[in-house]
Length: 197
Image (cartoon, rainbow, N blue to C red; front, top):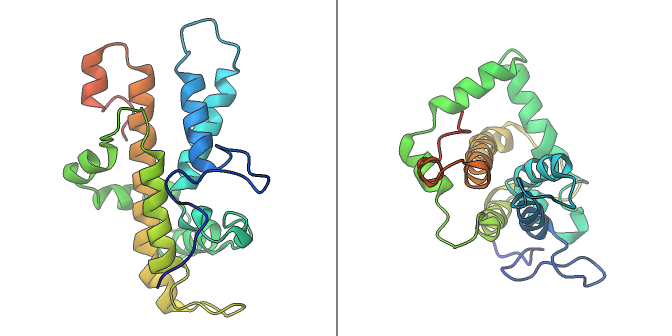
């Protein structure tokens, strides 16, 4: 399935054509603001940290880089809410700690190493995260879905592993970004384990 989606590398603008007005631009903007930590900063760093965490989560949700008409997936609650809530109820007894432990059991140290690796010179690889989500939107979120259709068990069971993996990747990558930003020494930054769960 080939889709013309909102995100392409270097294509980060809003409906008015203002550059860096997308989730990738937001991640890079708030990361840059947080780099001023320790200096006298004109930024509200608490707010910057909260927005960075929010947008790193968003970029790992495939519909947030899907069709522009979906308004970043905000008009479709399946991936943000329904799949997670159904899994919480059916498999995890509505206990977020149980869900987190189950997701962690499926993460290998090799996964963590690959997910946190950023081959670019920047602190984040937000373009990479968005490109992954674009591919997942094509391959999973929109695949075999008709407008106004009811999604059944096949959709849920084939997409749940993707949702859980994206939750894990978002957490690992947020931890890696925070480690790079706030580590007290170059050695801590290299280990990248300070914030990992």
